[in-house]
Amino acid sequence: MEFNTTTTDAPRIRTGCLVAGVFEGRDATPAYQALDAASGGKLDAIARKSRFRGDAGKHLQVHALDGVTADSVLIVGCGPKKEAMTAARYLKIAGAAARATAGTGARSAAWSLGEIDVADRDMEWKSRVAVERLGDAAYHFDAMRSDPGKDRTPPPGRTSIAAPRRHREAAAAGIATGQAIAAGVSLARDLGNLPGNVCTPSHLADQARALAARHGKVTFKALDEARMKRLGMGSLLSVARGSRQPPRLIVLEYRGAPRSHAPIVLVGKGVTFDSGGISIKPSATMDEMKFDMCGAASVIGAMESCATLELPLNVVALAPACENLPDGNASKPGDIVTTMAGRTVEVLNTDAEGRLILCDALTYAERYKPDVVIDVATLTGACVIALGAHASGLFSNHQPLADALLAAGEHAGDRAWQMPLWDEYAEQLKSNFADVANIGGREAGAVTAASFLAKFASGQRWAHLDVAGTAWRSGKEKGATGRPVGLLCQYLLDRTRAADRTPAPAA
Image (tube, rainbow, N blue to C red):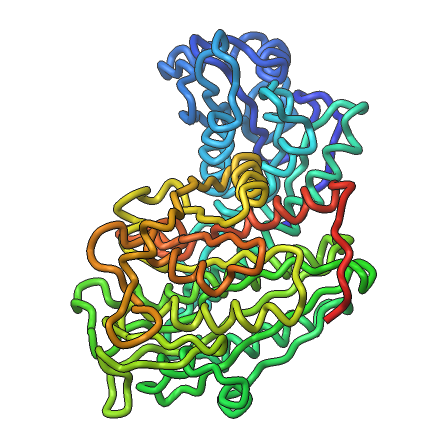
């Protein structure tokens, strides 16, 4: 999809579909008012006859409107004007408008919703939202179909973002940011949607290698099983024992700042298929366990966006990747494994495998002397029960980092909610036979999982995002969402604006 800006008045924009907002009771926005005036009142008359009131997210398409250059006008309800337009409501409206636009069949579109005032948001943000939501609406996963694109309406190939001349530069900046983030989200979704027989640990590594080849400031390497054995990653390797697919520790390094600047390290869980191992999962919906590598997909996607934007930061992405399958050589409940950090872990449940691969990756991250470490994982069903599909669970041992991630999520419309990480929860992880157990019982499962990871990040400013409820959708709309690429990218963008970066020796 291509994007540009336009300062042309709404009635004179040449496009296939012009998107304009209207508030409840058909209380006009400037674009709607101009379009209605140009058409001699026909636009409002058609809306009235169609009983279109302007409820938030509702839409109506009007074709061949007299006095208007666009082939059609898509009016989108913006809700009550008397209530301040919040970012959350604008995001809802933008999402509905984008989906409606994608379904019109128009070859080109123009977007005038940027004229709507949004509390604490500027034109750059609104333009970025338009690009991201239009990209989301246009996304289709066709890679495994024999006839890609069959029976679906192609989205507009080109979209113009309308902006006043004084805001044109901001709109263009928003478009550039939105395109970069949309590319990262799309990559994460593609990786997540691939089936487990295609997206193996080696395939995931190949895609990371291809990313590095596209961007001059990114380097790639992948640690194989032999190298991980030499490093003592017994915990990560124990998860891979039941699979014929060799594990990989994928490493992407982006250098956009001097070596003296400590990097931000992103760690993503990459279980490319999770059967549960010997503690096997129920068969219903087990197909969705191909999404158990969405943490890895999201940090790879964030690196794509970061490199595209050429952010003045140093960022490292680590993705421990393996399969978790039952086999005569698979780990068994009661086995004890030794982590790279030297701690022993009693594996009480082989389906609590994500923390077993992440703990070794967190230890590996220490060699970079990072400023902060953020891990992302589809870690626990307990987090889905606690927060549903609306917010990712956030845990951290450093409140300023937690606050920054929460703020980034709010700004990006990719929200997280902070959960407790108290010492009392770690008590549930005591083992009679090892330093720590890998599960802490039924109660507070998301918290005890985070508490386990915290033991391996005690010397770092660290945060954990449990995205088990947000990384993919089930049911009719089943598929990867690309979250939390938006949150991670916003955090990185915020860091570029921060005046104080902590220097540290290069790894």
